[in-house]
Image (cartoon, rainbow, N blue to C red; front, top):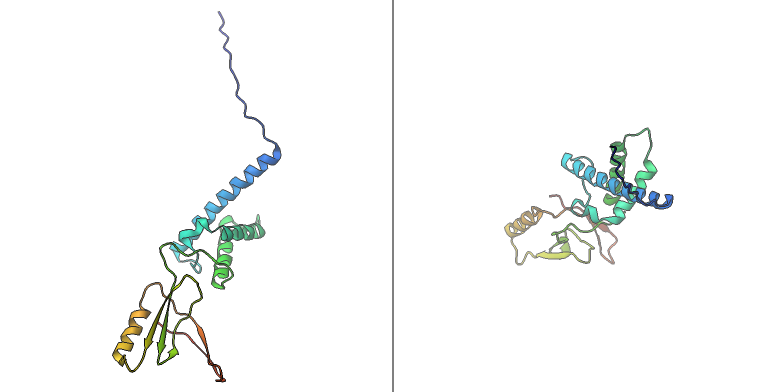
Length: 185
């Protein structure tokens, strides 16, 4: 006796080619972003490049990721290894951040901050422009602060983590000289 069983084949509804292409491009972009972010973090650990990317917020940096993907598509070449092209894109992004051509979100749990030191009425250190920045103004007036206190103040501020030296310009109306300085730490 022969037993015949009935097998039901389930089929997936067929999507139009345009929809399939759209889904493919979305998934391709998702995987590329994952690779890009992973390579950025690898380079940070290796100390490769400028290491100035917003690593904590990189997944939310949509404008940066869009630019990086655009650069990748422009640079992509079948004769160049994938990771080499990723490195070229990361280098380009890092240089744009360094040149202030890309604005990134602030790292979480870090409050932007600058310190301005005024010695005898003259600004001798940093000026910042971020509207959300915390500004500490320290005036070292010779009438109140002796040389030991002034030296101690500089030593304390220059060793504070997260603060970086910045160039500045001092303009004195009526005086024909423009001075610029950078504090060495």
